Image (cartoon, rainbow, N blue to C red; front, side):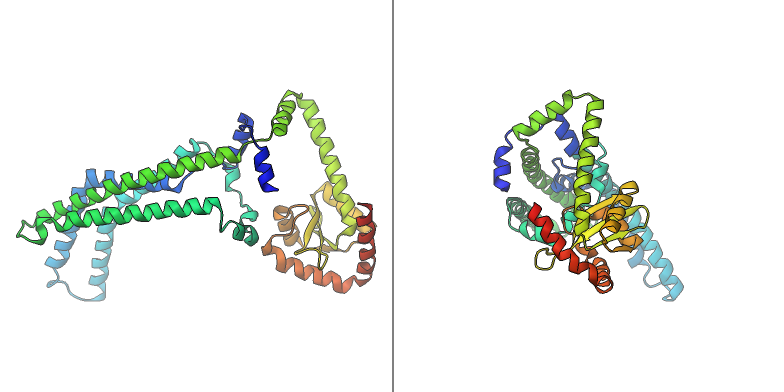
Length: 369
């Protein structure tokens, strides 16, 4: 079924579709871009401030080692010494931390074109579904990600091997040298490693980003019917669109209300929210949301429930959460299982007479369908 849907999506996404998907956070983005820019930021820090950082490290080391004999080993002096060292290390590492933070912001901004995508920040409970997660364990995207991770590991191993060859060839390991050469050696080694890592990860980031861009473009493709419908909707007047939306909403609400009489229970807020739940043992893998509404529509759900004798349970927190994370026609999220199970156990115990009628009512409704 999924393959058939993909095959039918042959048309390039329209500007409206791209804009809608962009607002949801569906645009090409690669973690490797952030890694590459962070490495580049570190390289700039080393190039422009490397000598300062190395000199600072030597000053701290010299200060510590040169005054070990004069340090009075007590709690106050050790605390003062530790504070001084921490302040100095913080001052030396601050350029790297600031540069990494700016690189992360730049990476996100470049990939999102510096546009805000608030819908992307909303929590998607479907991502927590273990069944969907298990299906994604073996997929094209997983294999590509594995390949990219393998490339990163290979690049790091190659750069490390290359760097070790350069390091062991330095005179510092086999000849007398000036003490000041140690600082130059450390700075040069850091520059050597950062340059090669940045180039290697940059190539991998380019490959990853191009794949993500291709994937995003493919996923956003539309069927010919969707393109026609969008053009038709674009030609409608705002009044006609509003009337059509209202009609669609009324039809959807009418359909939802038809399913309320077959619910096991309606959980209420009590006035703002109402969520009707159904669970048929042997049929449903988990309790299903058959209807939900707020304010006026919540009152209509409660009225239909009262008319057909559906148990109504007031639980403000559960009703609010079910309304927020539950989808009509779908199972409740896993994190709500315990709360809903307690409510169902309560109504099964206190409304036994209702469930004798409910089985027959569901049978009649299924025959009509």
